[in-house]
Image 1 (cartoon, rainbow, N blue to C red):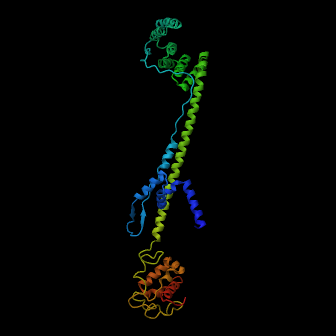
Image 2 (cartoon, helix red, strand yellow; image 1 turned 90 degrees about the horizontal axis):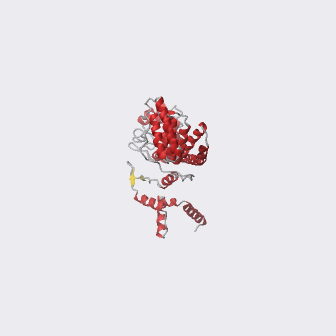
Image 3 (tube, helix red, strand yellow; image 1 turned 45 degrees about the horizontal axis):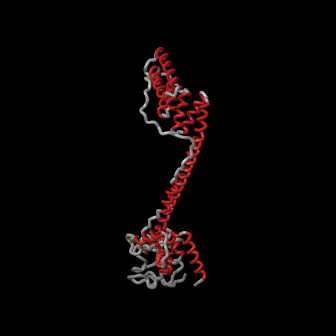
Length: 406
């Protein structure tokens, strides 16, 4: 076998190894069938496309008995599936320190009526009840402390301290949601309540809401610093930082994914637009390359009126003959022209292959003069003085005459 052909075959095999999808090309179906007959295993994508290509039907373009085009094969979806897999972002778990508890789902505790007018007597009674609550709290009687503080809140619902104290007891009872409700009530009454921020921050930490807990505890420490807040912050802040870094990381990954997807979409739209443009251009070139129904190639619309000269002869001829004198053109018309047909021995190949004539035929002025002469040969005289038209007619007559002098 020719060494050059062997080298080409080796290069083709290497290409198939690096890109097995080449085997799915319809024009290589014979080679794919041959490989399979030898027991070769063809990649799934290539097999599926091969099956699809066999099922394709052929359509005949309307108005043409010869031009047949194969319907376009659907684009493989493998690449799109791979893109979807790449686009999927699975967030990893964050390793956090510290314990959390299940949220308490008890009915909301009794709250005070803010619309009630608080008298001095009620304030004094609320303070006495608060004292009893603190005594119970010191003895570890948390439920009893809650009862006393609830009575104190009823007597004086405008006291942020009462709500803050009860919220602190709920923290000890490991009821974070109840503590958050009391802390919110305290902060509504006094937005600068250190007890309110502290209790809410600690409750949120118990629920694993690390970022929110850190924010509340920092505010509480700013208003009224104490060692307990500092101790809790040391546990809360590392988790809050880890979660923030985790969030930023995956926000960045999602943005990169969206940017890549947008770039692919732009590239795909450009490719589709280019393909549509190339297809339209190819169809236009194919249409323009087909022979027209009449006239010379290059656009003689409809051909000469009445057909080619000589169908009945060009009687008379110009007075004094054609420019430069064309022998053989007698008084009866074109050389060799019979009374009822085309001139004998016409060599159309010379006309169609003559670049000067073909260039002249593209000139609207020359074409108009030739059509005028074809309509009425007697009009030749008026175009004889035109330096564009006269040489063209003379050259055509020489070609039609089959051997006149050039």
